[in-house]
Image 1 (cartoon, helix red, strand yellow):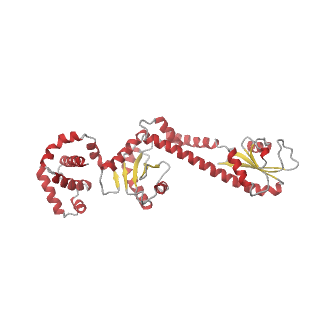
Image 2: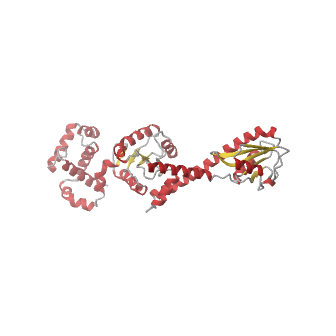
Image 3: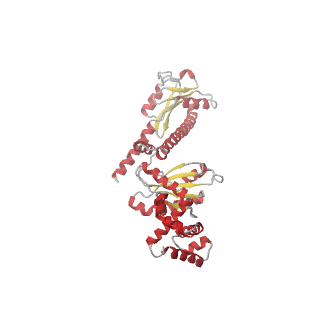
Length: 397
């Protein structure tokens, strides 16, 4: 808990440091002044946090020092008024000067030249407009920087052959992701002819169940990839994994329907995320299911068998090849495939196959007699039926 508090404190400190680095750029200030002077006859100056004029209606003043602005920045005064009797150096003229702030930090001064009683309210309006524009520009730039960082993070996370753990950690820190948080990859499949994936991604990331610790990207033209953070306690996460994911997917399906979602393996270390995604991709490539949500942990046996060379499987099952013709193998694949998908529930399989339950029982009895095994009574014999199914299925693919 103490370590987590330290990490949280470190993140807040980094956020503060980023804000302190914000500077009012001369080109940005010049653009503001050029826009504002079309609406007012008064001269407008913008000074940076050093008191130097960086933009002005009077171009000759750009680059000169504004003493009153420097005092405002130094003392954090909200407003300073110069009248005819003031004797500031640096050519300070009568007018109103107001502090410009971003996130409560002083970044400059806006000055409007003229009789203070005439320009005061105008200066306040201009200050509000300029701060609003500054906020928008800085937020836009921050969003662009974050997007760029996210793109580099995604590339290192999923594309690089041997990603640097140090680099991944640095990217995660910049994006405020907790490095050791347990996350699970969800690879959403969309019909791109029906849905705009940019809009689909927006719907996913702006759902109430999407947290700041969740990661999401457009993976390709038909997929969205999400690494969903689950319960912080590793022990509780094991049991909470499915209910949390299922509940969130139910929300997503209501607002942005997907064709399928392939749920990979839970991961805690950033440099293992690619393996978690590989499991999601394996599901899409190898598993045919009527389910919309497909979990990798439901197909561990298939995955392990798929990693065996076909030659090894042939060495185990070649006699069964010769004993059962192709038509019999196809019938086996249809029946056992449905039973496996329905956890060997005969009623559910008969509905799925559009067969009477007695017909399913008859076909299964023929297989029991052929192999001398009963997958309903002996767990090891069910494993045999499953592995033979995987072997014959792999031969056809």
